[in-house]
Length: 308
Image (cartoon, rainbow, N blue to C red; front, side, top):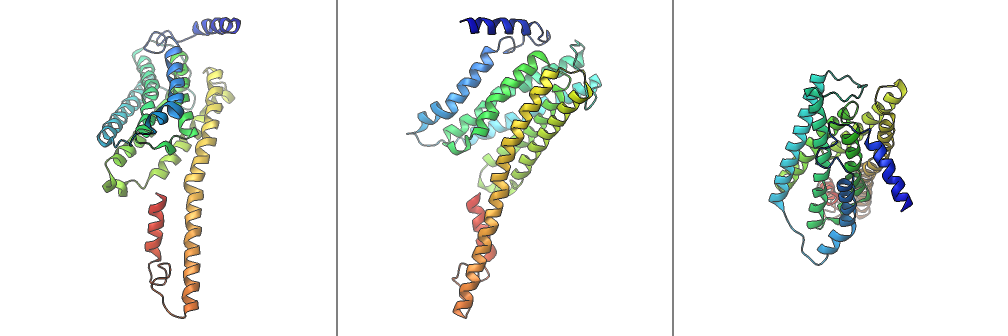
């Protein structure tokens, strides 16, 4: 009880430093809604949801997925637009933009854009719900749950204490990435006929890694140059971006670089084995691993389909 009392006293003190413009906005006043939802999200993603679906057939949800992804694309476009126009009107500079609590219209617009950005992170819990309902449990990795459960926590802090300054460019870039991401998933939900248009998923992950590097660089620059932005928030961004670079970097390594190398090695083995068999037979064998018949590239395409 003593620890709880001390924690409450600490929160009351830091609450006095919160931004008065956003402090009374929906979900911002108290940490309980956001932190409770994030905790429930973790429990539901790893335990409750999969347990409820264990004896049920996976749902298709094609139309729901299309509508959801269109809605999320629009929401992120709205956030991007509001932040960009607000930053232009307010005369924001890059890479250092001091934080202030101005009540001028452009600064309120930016604060509102950051609030919408924070709310979008709560809405994104639905991403995982779709995985659970469709029994795509393999997609619910540590990286996925860590990403979705911690983003609302960080941006609740950002919305309550620093809804402006260096926070705005970070939200702006991420909203832009999510416009592209939800457009991708919207196309994927349309069905197999659109798979040929989805060759660029690898580059989406690359864009995410680039945005983490940008956010990390800007936060380091703020500390190094003494930019008039709360140092504690810059340190929080630095540590958070490092964790993302490690986790997303490992995902990219496993999903694209190592998988590609494995496919290439397998193809080389097929060519080598097929050629050896042909030489041993002393004649062209049309059934030897699809190689002697000139179907090596057809086989490679079949291997790619298996991987995808």
